[in-house]
Image (cartoon, rainbow over all chains, first blue to last red; front, side):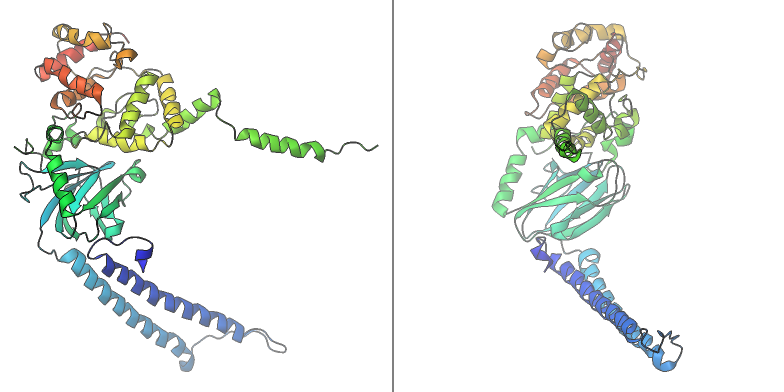
Length: 253
Length: 214
């Protein structure tokens, strides 16, 4: 249903949509019932000719039932929501299906950069492909990502994948996704991270295997290889040589 | 005969006034717009545009209008600030993208160039005498006194903070800047820095540039 407003492009986007719908439906139902009942009560016990509006304290047993029974029913709905949420949480965050490709995601003020494991599927080897602002992935392929921050707290969010994960400086956070639909989707930062937070955007490009192979080949061209050489930095605080993956020097033979 | 009523001229005047208020910016408003836009730069470059070493933001106050525009356009197009290892460039690139129009880009450049040049504080120790010999390579574009040359698209160097010059020369030398064909000036600088053999040479030439009067 949410897909009508925002494309779902990962294997778990539907289960998250269903969960959101379940919560909205249950909570919405009780909102309508409770508000309807409230207004009915106001109307029912209003001031009338020869009788003032009534104040009911609700201490008698037959009156208290109007509280306790809905209360139990709401709790039953809560349990339903918790069961649904835990199921989705386990599936999306707690279990990682085996990786077919690995990519490292770097967050920094105010850009996203990526290190694709390349043809050998291993990070920090000579055939890694490093990009800024664009993450290229193959459709119907399970990716594990390692999320790191180069400075402050950020949050890696791909709305179309229904993916959101905080990046915490000093920690490497693992996650996964499997894109189901070729196309270009937005990446945004969803954790306030400084003056440029609102312009901290990137794109994930989901490609068919042929398109992806072409991209991998082009990424090995001399310009990219040269650009990917690690730098000697002037600022100790921003020194990339302390970041994971900085130790390799050459891209592709 | 009745006197013309006040309302007969109030309404047209109001309409005209409102219409004119929406008109294109004059010179004064460009300066105001530039100052407004500059607020986005303040967190890193400082209220006077003097730069902040700790975040790698250079002093920009008083740099030439044409140079600021040129570099902002490079950031907007992605010719600059899109290298994996250029962390400071990646700070700047999205910020440049927040400029909504070319008029805004010009307005903020004009404002920044109108600010007085910041004071210099020496943070590096090089041999200015050895640097003078090395500087011979730079003269063709940047000028004898490091004053810059718009025709060569070479910015002024005299008065630029030493830590920024050192950091930028290192980026040029390693190819963090100057590897993207979309930025021909940087590509040229990448090859020019081959004449600087090591970190000491970089420090020396910067020490010499620091002796030049802006």
